[in-house]
Length: 116
Length: 113
Image 1 (tube, rainbow over the protein chains, first blue to last red):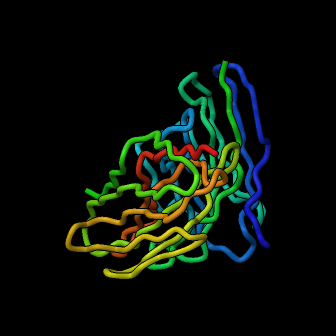
Image 2 (cartoon, chains in turn yellow, orange; image 1 turned 60 degrees about the vertical axis):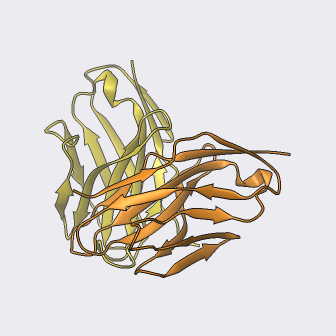
């Protein structure tokens, strides 16, 4: 069964360092997303991406964040200069259709980011 | 704006007990509604969905009915098992365009043997 894969599963970094989280969405999906979950709490939307550009982003997704689909299979989230409050589980998701009636999301297992 | 409110947890039940997790929503237009489940140490996975009023989603013994009049999508299961212990998230997608799934805060369920 096709699945979304994420790497690394866990990353520890120093405050101020750059971090790149990688995702391989399901191959025939067109819509890609990043969500984060702080300490098992609410799942927060960060950004959605379609047709090689950002479709929507939240207030959390400020200038420190960027996304890229560099090669047609990977979908990356970059945090330019990490802060302590960026410590969270970051989930990549993909869907076959947009925010429509069957827009169910397929999630990866998550990348845990710890900022020291 | 669009939002999802679900009952606070944790919910602790004995095996074979009846489960209800309440979920209500606020949305413009007619959203599609979802329940996602997160098992310990894993990502979220879709449990069930309903795309229009009066639809009933069901999967693995869980059910939820899309109630437009009460803007609710309560999750129910007649007889829970220890393996159902997880966090359950109610969610919606706007059907008026847009790409964002909006999640509730999640309800943690513990089932004791």
